[in-house]
Every structure is written in C-alpha cells, then in structure tokens.
Image 1 (cartoon, rainbow, N blue to C red):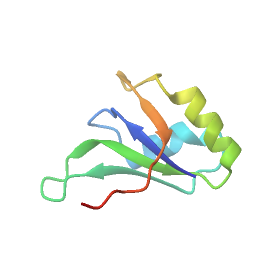
Image 2 (cartoon, one colour):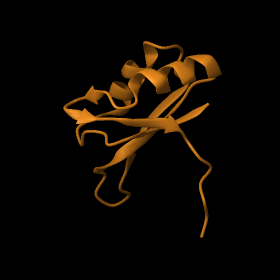
Image 3 (cartoon, rainbow, N blue to C red):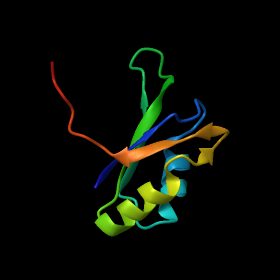
Image 4 (cartoon, one colour):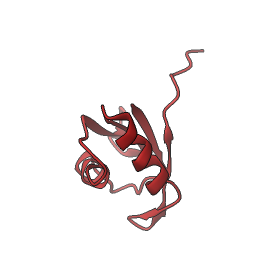
Length: 83
C-alpha cells in the first residue's frame, strides 16, 4: 500500500520516514519529495508497505501525531491526477 505523509518537517529525511513507519511493519520504500532545482523538501513524502494491515495500522496510529515538531497528515495515497 502506498501511504501519503504530509506536513513533514523540512529537515525530515527518507531514513526518518523509514524508521518512523518501521514500528508498524516492513517498509519497502520511504521517500521525502524534494524540489528538482533546489533539492529542498516539499514537506511531504510517501511510504510503501506491502502488508496492507500493517499499513492501515500505521495510518491509524500516525495520522494527527507530532513528529519533529509538526503534526503529520497520514492517509492512503491517491493515484496521481495528470492535467
């Protein structure tokens, strides 16, 4: 399952996301989205977990919790809409 993680602290790294979500199960991939030119975080990222129940558990337990002094928005990622 692909999970959207919003309102990330600017200093959060892929490793920070990986560690946070690993408490709920195996993380296949964790990535903080960065601006192509400046390489600064855009304040959100995605986590992929193959175990759907672990992913649901992570969403339920991490949504609206404080991580690195920011309140996270965590939900199932929706497919990208191309304009």
